[in-house]
Length: 85
Image (cartoon, rainbow, N blue to C red; front, side):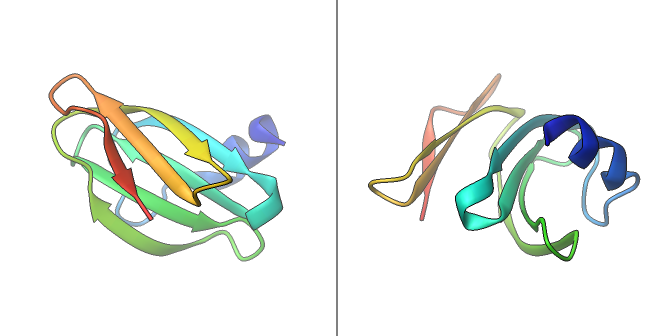
């Protein structure tokens, strides 16, 4: 799924320097860490459209999802681990 999703993304609006990609199939969402513009994008994988965009701090890179808490965690070169609900 990740390879085909990456190929389909192309130039995604609001994404610069896509660094991290986390696919959460049960939610039909993908989280994209963009270190070029310090954004965390939430992508609807059904429509291949960005549904939300957040300030990702400095250099977001590593992503993790806690399904029990419904929380996405972001860490990077200039940002301490941050959570998004």
